Length: 444
Image 1 (cartoon, helix red, strand yellow):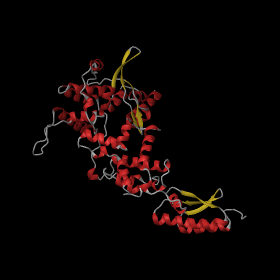
Image 2: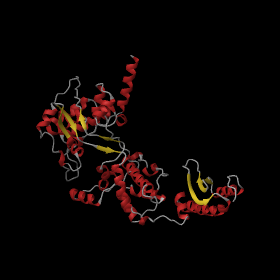
Image 3: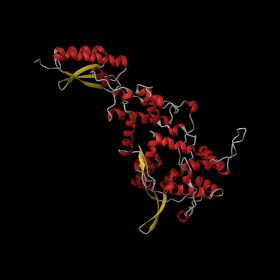
Image 4: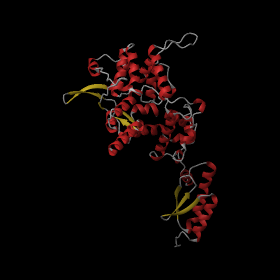
């Protein structure tokens, strides 16, 4: 039996022959078998173990197989693992033979039940809508179906795959997200969600490695928003209490129900949707605010829990006494929030931005009184402080108010029902204040 060593003449010859095929290609001993390795600068190392023993008797057969693999990679664009699979005679299933619909269903179970699971509403919005859900929404919306809402990225991908319009993950991603603006947050989300699905198919469902997205540069598919199309950031910012009070006082003279909603959002740090999940409970003989809303997301979650009111102060530093709990318990003070098809936030936005009916000549109707005040405040806050006043500013301002009153970040995070890491990521002043307080204490 021939002696097996890396310095044997046959081994040196095999490595030289493989190296001549392309720069970075080589072979090595993998516990008695031949391993083909590709090392290219600034790219991840690729390797595959071939069904040939690391000895002189099988060196020629190994080289022939490697040469065939090289041809598949260099000329036909296959990945190393896929080329090795095809060269062995075990070609992967064609696109049409793969159960893409079944894989989407399994992916849904995976995403909604494991790890940092997402809620089913998030799945429906950002990943995939079933045929039944599409029909249900179509019946409710009566023709005003918005493409982005009704057809998430996996719906687009499934249609392309089942019709055989694409054969590579690159083409699939590009075609599936064509409806989203290049560089936009929604396109970025769609690209990442589709790439995650394809990786799941390869790793968990054993789909052909040609669908592996590990080596793709996703930013190439996300793109960049042209400078001419860039809009002013709409990220919500925290604002001082007097800004919110000016809006609330103005709205109170127009619609007391929406004014009450704004008071609750300000004092309790609520998202608009959480107005639907607000309760008053008794604990150890005392009444307390409680929110039953739970939100799951990839970057964290919001838990149901007790709420801690923080009163707003006017410019003179006087706290506003609104007796919110007593009023809330009497009932019928809030707008009928459950009637809004697109959610409470959409209903509140429609109220704050309401204008008269568009005229026959196409001229937009006049702004309502509350819309004039809302846009006036938005413009003033942006002009004077470079901040964006949005519906989420009520929640962000609650966080800022807590820290201004000396409440530590961990306690504020608990009150807002998310973890400290999430809190410091989305509310940067929380982390800054904690650091300042520590240094003040130690320096004293």
